[in-house]
Image 1 (cartoon, rainbow, N blue to C red):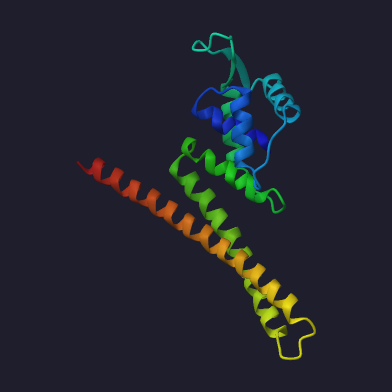
Image 2 (image 1 turned 90 degrees about the vertical axis):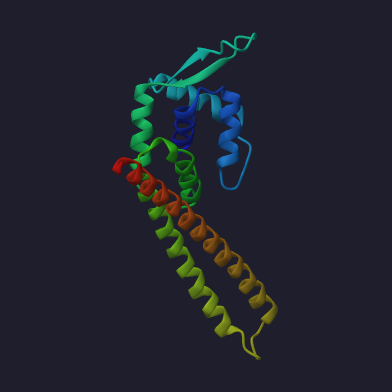
Length: 190
């Protein structure tokens, strides 16, 4: 799973293991620290597979090494970007990793990834809406524990709001892509 983000970040520029560790930790949902015991074996695995090589940083007097993606690594990155995202606990993190690499794929693939994400968010929204409705029906004058039901309702309302925010984000991103396509078409007409 982490290979997707690491290779995606290396598509933009060469990076140190320290920098990659920080980027990886900030991209995970929820955000967390990645230990050297996770990061450096992963980089060694990518190097052994021929997907990255380490080069010296010419701007660093301490001979710091930077990870550099190879053509094998680029091919693996593109393959990972095309793979569907499975349901599960890591789904959100994998989509976020894909979002970080959208700059490196063509517009059609960008739109597909965003639409796939919009679809799963809509499914989540529908489930939360059903649960919300169910809790509302349970909340009657003679409900055994109305405080617990209200707490559940508030929690589901947060989940609904998060889904709506994600949908708004996808809609804006897709509109931005659409506007760029229109601008490119206008330029090509002249």
